[in-house]
Picture 1: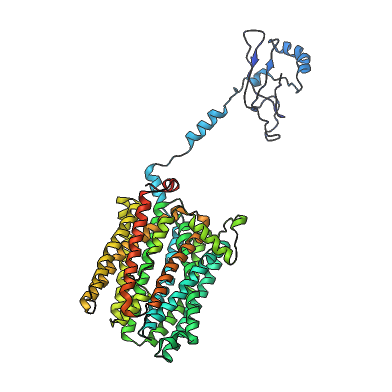
Picture 2 (picture 1 turned 45 degrees about the vertical axis):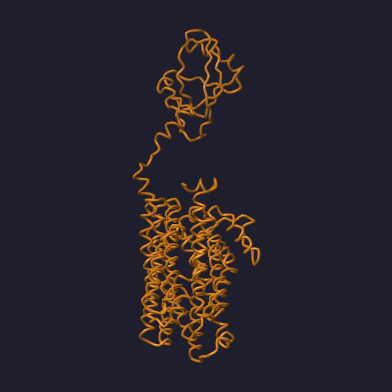
Length: 564
């Protein structure tokens, strides 16, 4: 038999006389009261307790005098002290007993539930809108300089010699650096504090930019007529090294913003806000590509190459402090969310050298959205797009630099349009089918473009412009898949591995470009460009086939992530 368990205060339990001389009461859920938390007030206060698995035996139920007479017998059978309770106090408040099930039910009923409209509004609201705007400004400032240089250096090198080989060699080694060092840089970015590492890489990239400008100015000051002599010059070695460092830094900076920071600022559980942030970031990058290519093309058509390169160096110098300040402001407006540290298992800590590269490749191959990523990679085994080889090809065909810059600008403009079109495609077809539509559209237009090239009429300007227009329109499909593919990867990859897998994916894409540039080094004559165009077409068609095959035959893990 149990006893009544009480605190230092009196217990207010109304005991009513039973109809018989013996009554057994059972209660549930007993807990001690917080000692000393209630004020001690004699003969006139209430307190509550719960009693569990306690039996109270009433051998006699009578008046107060009868209770007092039975106290010795009760005390002998009960190990806890029994306190006589005055009946006037007992009747002041009834005992309110609430079972645990009833309490949980009432608690869940009281929780607010968002309506469908409220959930949609929450999903469309960024977690840190002010931080997002600062990140957009920082991306525009850094992207403008980067896109300007991406167009400037191939044009400047192509003006030195009438061969694709110097441009192909520089591109070859920069892509090799990304393939080898990409996973290592990704793990280092996952390990070190974000903002200091980001600022440090900005300074490294700017230094590499300025060094590259100095080497190209040196090359134009002391020109050489032989391609072999150019490849053996000291300035060319320095240019290759600086270009490799610049690309590796740019890769890490881009992945940090596109795969990590944009998710943190928009909110990982706010898909509409994340989709809109991705679209805005893509538009900024494409506007920078339009502005950079068009600006350098216009300058090159009016001024000599030396003046254009000096202007580029000045713009790079002034942009660095702007980017650093905007990065600090982004972190401040987002309450320091960018600089948070990630938890690392003992097996996922930073591994230096070959271990880091192997770990990055293993994580990349084990991701659940591997076919979508490989389709994205195959699109970069392609010369039918704005890039160093296409710029060198068009420059050596004798096109006006403003037309070459306009081609790159229009390709970027198609990318801006794709950010709007892809949103409508996703609404009408779904995310995965929208990606398939973009790939098929690109493959169809590039097939026509290659047919035009092999018709042999590119010696005339009108067919050449039609060829370029087809490539420009194909960018609509490419960039549509780029926007959709980014969200597929953001959805399917854990945030703790975003930088590692993102940089490894960029390394694989760079490997595809690396192989194409290796082929271009061998087939370096301009007349061999048609062979490179055929290889590009096969790669794009293969990407479309791979993605569509994955769409038709998904695995169970992929079904759990997406609606097939």
